Length: 217
Image (cartoon, rainbow, N blue to C red; front, top):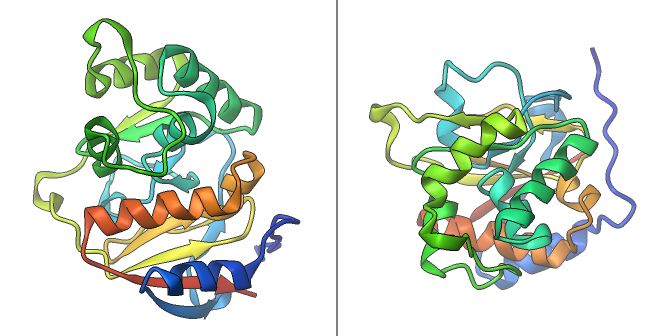
């Protein structure tokens, strides 16, 4: 089945290239036909940009990919408290997806330590609640997913970030690439530069890679 490749009306590819070049990244344009793009299946949980999802046999289907999964929606849009997390899960449900996170998440570690300068909402769960325990527990209520990472895949091996501007499609998770669905961020109403700041900052602090592959038709 051929995929219809549509970008968000406000998508600006020149802005993306200029932004990452300005941060010292190597920028490469890659035709979408050279990447394994699949439908971002409705009903599935969002996944992290983490390439280690690529060999996770427990993940069935292809959910869209955002930094930290549902964490980035709470950090940028709805809030890092209980109300914000519930709102983030509800926002995903409106779009036909479910909340998703995974163990050993670099995004969450950075957010907890206050090392992500781009976040709009600080992580502020009351009463000393540990988000590493509380969020997976809440997935049951949200009908979401909390994915594991195999012990042999603890280290990041990604060589580049696949930047997918298209909506309702995603790249197949692979160990050698971070995968990011910018189109979904725009559908969620997150300003493009804020979203790009967050994904760039996450990759820069989780690995030493500084290469982006921007998908084009």
